[in-house]
Image (tube, rainbow, N blue to C red; front, top):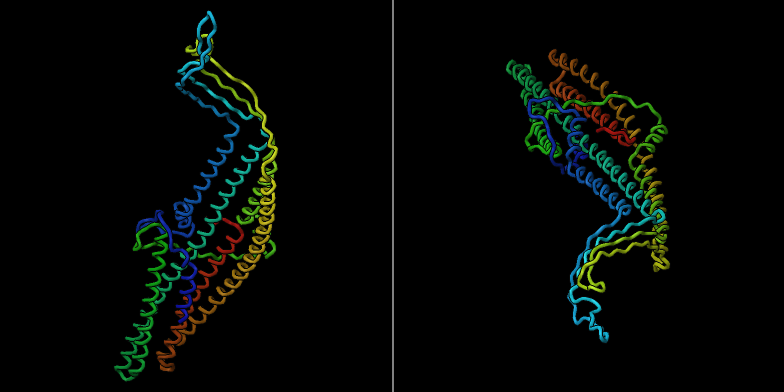
Length: 439
């Protein structure tokens, strides 16, 4: 049957949404939930989003670590050592003297500060800031992917709920028709064949309704899983059906997408990171100037070796790498390969976005035409059923023809709902393809 085909399509949209965690949904009897409310609630507590946001905190920590090179290193050291034998010197008529004491005490405060490293620290900090921006873009990209999965699940639920309402109305009409046929059969105006035909139709609709209820339970479980609610929680959904029409040409949509899509921004960010990494490699062998100072107490000074005395040391240092075993050379080769790879990735992303925009634009146009055609089809089916019902009561139409007309009317209503949902989902996909936020 056609309705099974519709259900399978919608279930495929949301079959990738089997894992979700906690969020808050209203209790039964509260206001219905729109698509936007559901998306916002899910992404505010979805585990993968929370995990991705921790990458931002990780990036903040790396920025702090990179900036730590601007600050001095200060430490306090203390030691005690007993040595033996101690060296002694004897001077005639003056006695014997120890050159250093057997018990040695020392306490020192050390201070080290890099004065200038020719931009190495500055470049490291800049690269970590770029990595943080990349982490933020990755979170946004994840939210977009999550949003489309939620939307597919949401519209599956809307379709199934509406389909069950249509089947209930169809069953009510068939049961009423069955009573009418039985009354006619009692007077000899109808045959047992008409009664059996109607009963078979009722049984068939009951089976369809059972399939719809099973699919509804599955889709509702998926949505409750998204929201972190009990599986049997009955969700009340608002009919958030989109009806706006997209009139912008494809080239305008493509230009907008290439300026807004997170994938392009991520590719640009990766390119900047690779370029900065190349500069960092170039600066690896730059010299550095540093300042050091230390001071404290220490014994072992002549003439009284056992008395601790204040001591200090102050100076500057200079370090110039001369040979690094070709590490800089091969790091440069590696970074250059990474830059070319990033450029190729960006080109692939651009082509993928262009294809996606064209596909989404075509789908929006096609589903919009289907909506208009379905509205006309429903109007025609409704009129045909009305005429068939009048003809049947007048005896000029068979029971089977009337049932066929009623089935066509029900399927037209179901198909109209399906095309409207397809159009809504196509619009959302196009907006996401353009880089717009739907959360």
